[in-house]
Image (cartoon, rainbow, N blue to C red; front, side):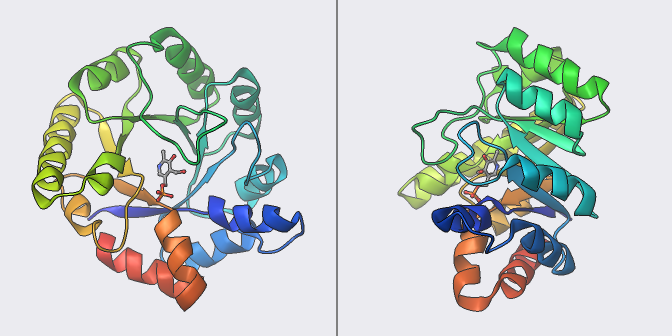
Length: 237
Ligand code: PXP
């Protein structure tokens, strides 16, 4: 049975729109856990557009499940993560001008930088995961870097326009999940997952956890956060 990690970034996006105190992402994390979330995901971006440093420090104390900190390889962010010590760090590529994370990390190209950041974080007892595209050589390099958790990027699976193209993306995700598992790597997935396209990903054999943010927070505007999460928990399980 797959697990659900709820990304609370967009609660903070709404708060930052007014630079006031509400809505509070810390309260969102509590509600998410009450509604059945298996972990809480938050991305401390270099530009601090939504989650702030203080949020991460507070979440570290208040999250009862697992705190999964999404983060870039930037030196300052790696130092913050090493200091705060979340349960898990998921390394993602980050560009200032992007609306949200675009591609997966290129572990082939940035091998040394990634291995170095991974080593620093692991030494602090933090589980390290890499957000990568479902591509064999990225998985091979992840293993070579001594990292045993990946999050497969489901953005393309979400974005393609035809049923045939989507089926092809799903097959790719299934094959790469199996390949990574054969190498002893634990496989999560996320990005762009919605109420209508999550079930097929949750059904992939051995899929550990799905990390979902935008679609849940968007639905929460209409049905409330607790209900939006409960509905997604049911789909994922
Ligand atoms: N996983 C990773 C690595 C991400 O960067 C994001 C977006 O912050 C998500 C999952 C959640 O994506 P979405 O908001 O599209 O559900």
